[in-house]
Image (cartoon, rainbow, N blue to C red; front, side):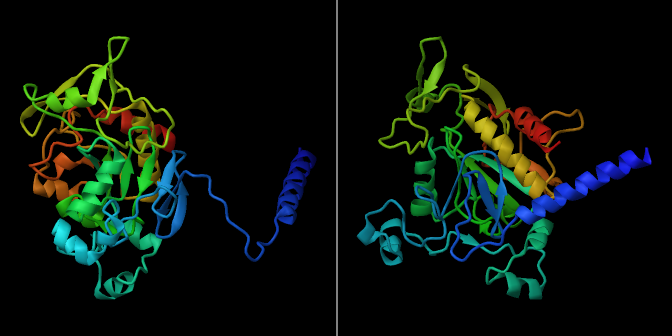
Length: 332
């Protein structure tokens, strides 16, 4: 028995030595390849296993830029942005200042966030729908028209766009901005049952009795060639948010898959961000704003409507159990 143990120990040692000897030092000018699923946190790359386009990639959306992305180039600068879009600041993001000491603020204001410090700060992941339908339009509205930002956009085909390093304080969720990461899911929104004209313009009947997504826009920006979006559940979903009965088509399976992977990644990177959603004592989803004290104490994934009474996103169709359940499975 002792001989067998020594044999296996020797084999393991030899294998480790072989691996070490096969590793070589990096060479000057050698590229460091990416696989296309990475997000950026404090300058570090983390895999999600979902398709990700960073702000620095071709076709990405860059919230660091002062210029408006979709305006004519000769009128995209700050001076013309004041005239044309009435923006009041060239910034679309800020510094996460809540809870920082004076010394930390001075360090981080220059971009010097380190990962352990950010892990002590971020404990919420806020889910939005963009009421734009496609991420291309979402960025145009946020960046060019409103002077706002969000860390991630999730298009109908499941592509995740990251617009800022997560160290930045994106402007997307008012009182939760300093402690949260945000994602805008491409979706046209939820509406009262007697006011579903927008839904009828965005969804058309499909041959099998369901519906498919048909954005009434010139350019969708979808990266998946010939993408056809179908709601995960074909029929309209009815539910009550903030005391209002609303109808909504579901998100696409591609969006749910990518969001579950992104959620699992964020909950792994940020230990205080618990992989859960707001529920009452009976274990049922809370469909309205959380009381201020509860919101202040809450650590986890939540909707925009859990933060503000004037918001209804991500709406009654959003499948919380699916996203959180799949994310929890990925984390095991």
